[in-house]
Image (cartoon, rainbow, N blue to C red):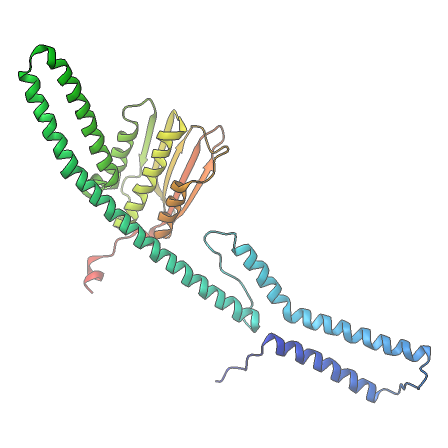
Length: 331
């Protein structure tokens, strides 16, 4: 069945005005009223009344035709300020409906392109992190280990007056080696690859707060559903960024790290009782967490808490977090 021809907005307005002019002409032809060469007041009033009625009908009909477009413009103004971009709810028919569907299709393409670009950037970033971590471990780490062994041997045979100086140098090299190893672990989460997300979160909190006075409370739901590697990496990186911000800037006494399931959502929460968000603008770290969350269809919320402190909440739909079964991959 052939679809009805689509009329443009300009055609609709022209047809409305043409129809009103035709109705006015027919009424004048069929009406017993006449206009003399010197129209009377009554005739002028009749003509003015007819003109006003035609104008009112024109306004109502044209407004009805363009009102969906006005509403669509308002929705676009609102959509520009939302993240992620909301979809439009235009009418099913007419120019406004076609325009809304075209805009929604364009927004879908934009978001798909953004996700692909962000995923490619994230993969490149992780690959670069892994390369740098490997170079630190195999290059700098091994060189410093060799220097440490040489200093240990020298200190054992050095005269007493030089032994204290060699010991200080050796301790400095040892501290630098520990720092290099810590940076390498920060760049590449080996524990996530080897032992899983639960152990990776525990190691992360121990590295950041093990030597301080901050009390860390961890709560990871036993029996979490199987998660894809991408989701586990996103959860770990968001927790890493949030906890690093707490360790560096918050001055918190306690930190709560919770990972569990709420309905069909995987939920990660990092909350502290530190300085909070007062007077602070969203930085690169927070934007990076939002971008990572978007890669797996998740959402990130950063909010202040009553009494001070900050709460970072990451929610990820479990449908996007399930690993692909081997049978489906093979098929």
